[in-house]
Image 1 (spheres, rainbow, N blue to C red):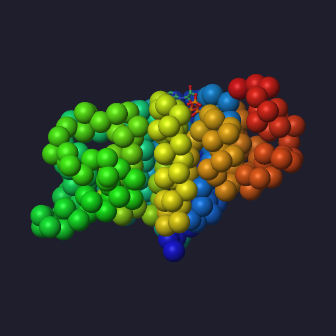
Image 2: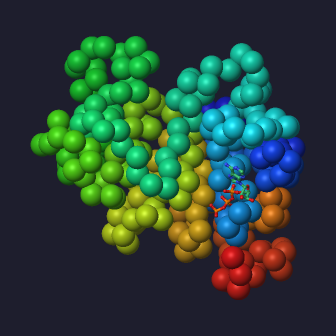
Length: 251
Ligand SMILES: Nc1ncnc2c1ncn2[C@@H]1O[C@H](COP(=O)(O)OP(=O)(O)OP(=O)(O)O)[C@@H](O)[C@H]1O
């Protein structure tokens, strides 16, 4: 079990613009939570705040709290590198390093001090297996990661995040740039990974949210409008606005 991730009155600003307006959310462990809502409603901004990726955006600032257990991730005691090891992130476009498949996975563990070759080999194999990529790449580990297909590159990026043993994985539209077969592989993988991880996924694809998530949060204009079990959000939402969005009437 990991410590529960929770936000409390979280607000995120870009300059004067309040992009995320006071969100209180608790994420269920070993579950998938989908963040949905029309373009510009603050899903990605909220997601990025969860492992302090917004720190990298000039002009962005935040108020409120993000807790992991009883620790505030924005406290001055937080080591951001360790935080991002524990809360990994995968972006919309696969972004492997310009290195071999092996080195993409070994990079994080090496950075965190693992030097033993056998141990690294094992981590590389385990991570690629967990990301359902091992069988496809085991004979070409030392070729460039850029020689992989887009779908394979995205699973490589998931393997890279897994290599440092995270508790939480943040996925920002991880399959939106992929073909249907690669997309279903990623969805299957999410189903496997949630057995040991807490997953938060931003998606524009309503079928995907319904298929992969246990809980769904509907955002609108920077506010959290509705948050419940996915089966309830998709069959009996409490707000008309949620119903209109999920049935494709806007957004
Ligand atoms: N780097 C940035 N600088 C300034 N404003 C930004 C920045 N990133 C996002 N915003 C603004 O913050 C608001 C929320 O954007 P965000 O990307 O979080 O929404 P989103 O729901 O993820 O949208 P999409 O579904 O289109 O990706 C928008 O008004 C957007 O223009």
